[in-house]
Length: 261
Ligand code: CAA
Image 1 (tube, rainbow, N blue to C red):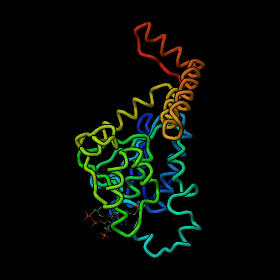
Image 2 (image 1 turned 90 degrees about the horizontal axis):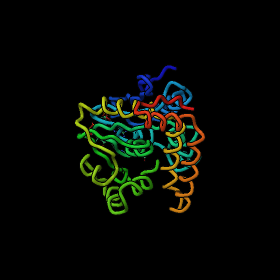
Image 3 (image 1 turned 30 degrees about the vertical axis):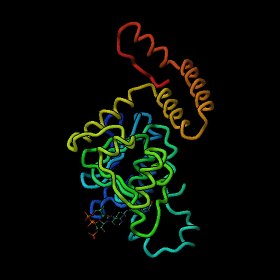
Image 4 (image 1 turned 60 degrees about the horizontal axis):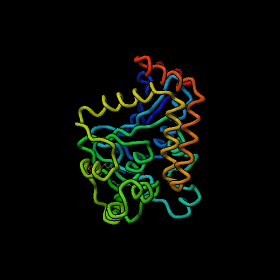
């Protein structure tokens, strides 16, 4: 597959996707988003790949939807196209991938860029990372999950302030607020993202899928429903060969060799 807006490669068992429109701060044109969707689908279908990373460059993860593309559009254009980033555009591949996707963020993650990072399973941030929903500065509001995912991640006070003023959060604040899992020196981000994704890829794939699904259920159900889901998923891992291997390996004081079965 030839991509024009992203760089895609397999690094060991990790599917690596780099947003690559440096001239536009990796603004998320429809073509770019569609390519990200295609790359995710290809990695999801590739048995050799166990986890994915989406990253940008040192200046920007992505500075949002492409404002130059949107500028001339009116309500009816957006409404009929179900813009931004609907199922047909590839964005759903990000939401529905079963393999974990890590966002490795350096520099700006703004607007749709922050939304794309938040749609990943977790965010590793460089110390240079800056997160924001600055749509209010250009007379609009977040449209790809910003008001919803940011609020769930950092709570109402910070999300409201950021959406109403366009204020950006630096990496330290983002970590304190729970938006990112960890901060790394910028020069170590890529290696660490690869290491973490590689570690996940070696785990039992059925267990990884179940863990991801169970954590996500926490966002969409009551505590009782979530606990019930988790209990059933936990029991079902005991139907896998990998659970036998994992527990045998522990008892025999050796490393497990998961077959993803
Ligand atoms: N869309 C299109 N082009 C963009 C862009 C965007 N979102 N962000 C940056 N660019 C382009 C700039 O126009 C500029 O291009 P030219 O060289 O051709 O002029 C180039 O990238 C470099 O940008 P700057 O010169 O502005 O770089 P800077 O270092 O001075 O500032 C920045 C960096 C703070 C990220 C600034 O570019 C910026 O504020 N960008 C827009 C951020 C924004 O408003 N994002 C929200 C978009 S709307 C959205 O995302 C809706 C949604 O929810 C889906």
